[in-house]
Length: 169
Image 1 (cartoon, rainbow, N blue to C red):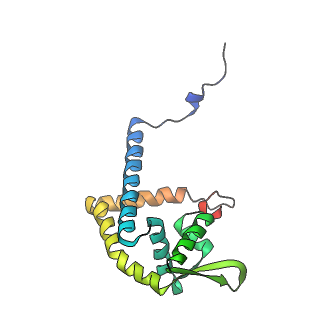
Image 2: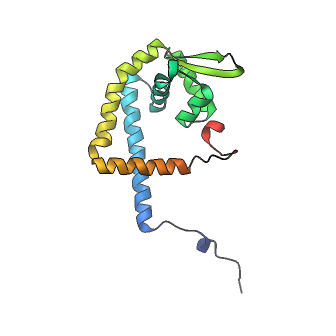
Image 3: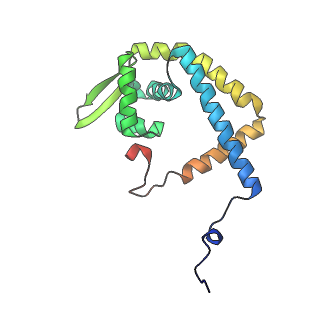
């Protein structure tokens, strides 16, 4: 007689409806990210992640952020951020500055050329976002989507020390 527990019985599998929702989410987010990435590559020669970095810097006081803070805002590893900033520096859109209070720290600073590229790129990007997402949803659906995404994001960003988050790697 086998008394070992059945591993399948210990898992809480997705219901058919949960599976439908999960696959719809994956399908939509993959297509949306690809759509926005292609629009930005076509219009500005940059991927969506680089545009997000420029926006974060453009919204920051004095158009500058510590690299660690920028990694946190972008939800990416410090290594990926360093590579992206190197590419943005090569384009003349960002420069690095040493942090006077921390010899190991650096700031990423949006240059005037970076401000100009954002100014040229933002209108087309906003149009792409609006057409791909917001124009397809009612105001109630937009509100619900925002609330749902906030709940999901909060659940994936624990406050405790040692959390395994990209910007801490």
